[in-house]
Length: 65
Image (cartoon, rainbow, N blue to C red; front, top):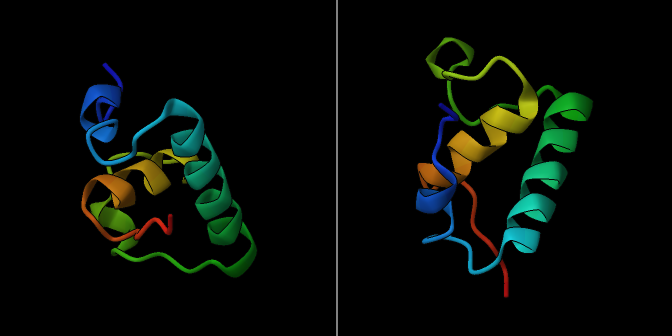
């Protein structure tokens, strides 16, 4: 089972393409800057792409239209 669920994320973001773009941009920021919005041990995912999806689910990432 993938966490967080794609169905839950698509209620926040209106398209799969935008979801992929936002998650990839945030994961690149995490890799380059080593800046996380939560404590590192509170993430379920070990990789940055999963961590960016968790941040999106928790409302820590704001999407500009």
